[in-house]
Amino acid sequence: MRAAGAVLCGLCLLLVACSASVLPSVTTTSAIVHAQAGCDSRCVYWFEYWPAGAVTVSTTPRREAGPGTGRVSEAISGLDPDTVYHSRFCRTGSCDPVQIFRTAGDRTSATVDLGRPLSTADTAGDPISRDAGLSAAWSADESLWLFGDTSQRNGPEFLPGTTAAAGAYTRGLVPDDLREVPTPPAPHDAGPRGPAPFLPAPEGLRATAQQGCDGVNPYPAAWPTGLARIPQTGQLLVVYAQTCVFSHTRMSTQRLSLAVYDPAANRITATHTPFAALPLEAGLPVTQRLGSPVFGGDGHLYLYAHDVTTGEITVARVGASPQDWGDPANYRWWDGSWSPDPSAAVSIASVPFAGSVHVADYTGLGSHRLAMLVQTEFGSGGFQILEASSPAGPWILGPAGKVPDTCGSEGYGCYALNGHAELSTAGRFLFSWYSPNDRHLRVGSVAW
Image (tube, rainbow, N blue to C red; front, side, top):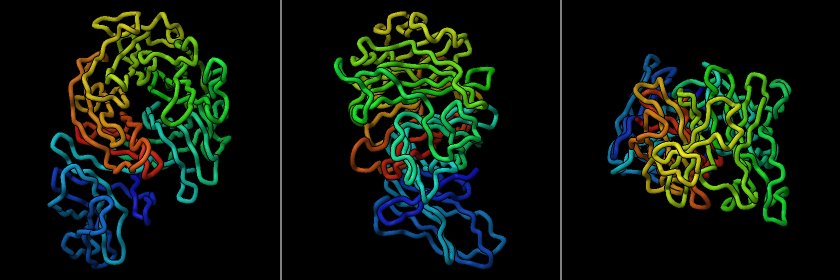
């Protein structure tokens, strides 16, 4: 396992892999940066740093190191609050890949970029562009990643819906050697080596009462909204939205499905679709657009929804057994108790804006139990972490921050913020986001 980094290449970011290093300690106006000296003989080393987009590069004092010199550190000061910085370690004749971090602000914690999650098919010559980025462990050392719409240079130009990759994971690090998962039920060794559709494409969706959703624009897509290991099994629950996509700003979720996936055999063994809009083109109400499955350990499965317009975050529950998932009559929504009426649901958390919501179980990481990651700023990747000991709350505010990314200047900016329970530690919360600068997911961390 290696962490991934980035080096500047003209106006773009060229992504490369580098060995894991100690994360910088970042405050509002300062940072302590670290590196392995790695000098074969005596050499001179220094650190360079600059705000993202700046032309002028600052440097630390030059110091000498020898073959026995290991980790070196340097304090840098005079930084601007809430600003994305690039830094890199240089020695005589070479410089390490760039490390990216954002300084803390008045109300935000510092964040550090850990790199891009990579599969063996995602190479410098044939890079892959993908978003969504949900992950969950299905064994003690293997996890599955689900991605949204995917394309690859010199590969499939566009794969709508969901693709997947799987592989080993290590807490605190970003996986860089995931294997692409072939379309189920093909065996893992059958290939393909590049991205392949994972969930079946929805059928019968409607653009209007007179027009089907079965073309290029609009097109049908099965997009993942949640992923969790089914307790006491090696299987995963995949929650996904059957969506008619008109454009990147207009889409209609028309059905919600829950699938049971066996990652060892690469088989979807059952699919349940409890909610379908009537008529389909009307789309599901917000409270039925569920995701972020959490098994409560009390005989129930909990799922979460959010309303971008109102900022409300709601929770529903159903029996934890797959046999309960297909019947909409089995679902209840939190209204202070548990109501069969989805329109009675009340918000379980107070945030100014809920651009996206991801909830997962972090039990076993220090005192943490359930954590909710809410994107609170459109485009800029601002977020709020909330924690709770039970699925309905109360949800308590934790650290807030912004992704360590300038987020581009067009379109959606940074989006698709998701937490990663199997990568996080007791001291660091690891999360991913879609970076328009990278056209891919990146993983960052924040202290919690």
